Image 1 (cartoon, rainbow, N blue to C red):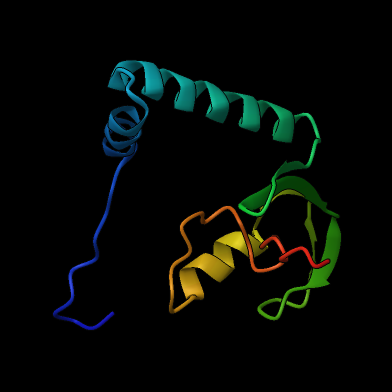
Image 2: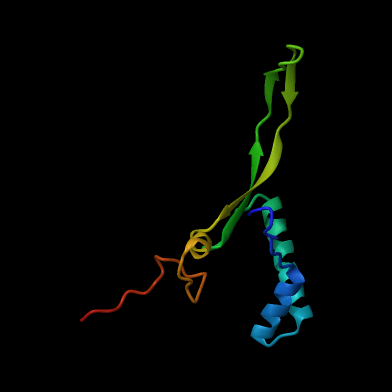
Amino acid sequence: MGKDTKQRVIDQKALAKIVAARMGREPAEVLEIMEEEQRMTMSYVRRGYRVEKRGYLTLEQKTIPAYTFISGLDGKPRQVEARKKISVRIGEHFAHYVKAEKKSKNPLQGPRDVEKPQTG
């Protein structure tokens, strides 16, 4: 983005309102569902599960092992403790939808999921 281009942002409450309107639900109900889904996702990742939201994204906890290095400043060995990080990978359908020139009606349906016409 250039200097003159302001980044557009949409927050969780605004998304909940849009989903609620499309689904005929109350925004508070949709927001509660969204928040519960987030809590569950974080809980499972914390417990070591890989959480796959098919075609959308995958989250998993990874451990970076401890290591030792020699400091360039004083020449002494330094120990870095093992630590955890969260890996987030964008799913194929998500990436395809964002990059595509022509937008599909169902962003969760990727290029490989399109039904082939039946013959015969």
